[in-house]
Amino acid sequence: KQEVTQIPAALSVPEGENLVLNCSFTDSAIYNLQWFRQDPGKGLTSLLLIQSSQREQTSGRLNASLDKSSGRSTLYIAASQPGDSATYLCAVKGAGNMLTFGGGTRLMVKP
Amino acid sequence: DGGITQSPKYLFRKEGQNVTLSCEQNLNHDAMYWYRQDPGQGLRLIYYSQIVNDFQKGDIAEGYSVSREKKESFPLTVTSAQKNPTAFYLCASSIVGAGTEAFFGQGTRLTVV
Image (cartoon, rainbow over all chains, first blue to last red; front, side, top):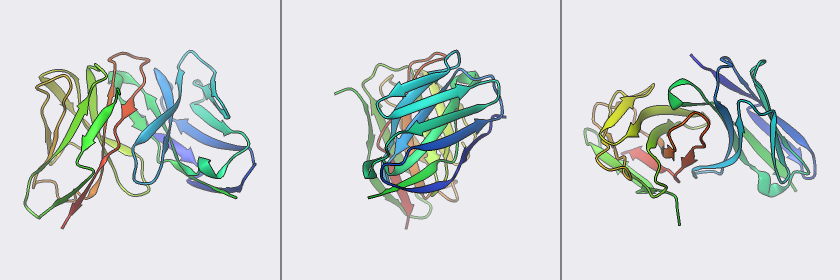
């Protein structure tokens, strides 16, 4: 059964820092990996989608990489801002068209 | 505006009562999903449907029921058999296919009183 782990569970950084969030998964037979942002009490907003054949995707200050063979993905946030404070979730899509989620990383960017 | 609408935003349930959470989408997606999120945790799959009039159990289906009579709608009923229903419930949809992206609604917070 697929298991997804996110490290660290929580992170606090000063504004302007570059940071990396990690996601690992146990079964490399995935179709894609998606990174989401969740604000408190809100739904999930899709940030980046990486197909299994891709190595990375970029959107603005966000860059996500995927190493399927080692079961790892990273989300890189450049020049962090207080508005980036949220919980970041990664999810992998595998057999049966199902998404399996990690526990999330709660990010706080201090002004 | 295309998207997924969940209602209500907040719902309170008394012990022994069934309640139904609404999820509607106008994205023309065939696949719809219900997830449960507990504080500080990731999402767990309750039920999913990839076509009208068909649905499958996810990892934590006990105490829940769904229907899929229309492509746009996938309501979730939390029954009295669900012993710990207080949680945040999220509905999602996607095109059926291996590499497709999932989109989420804004969630319903259910509290037992």
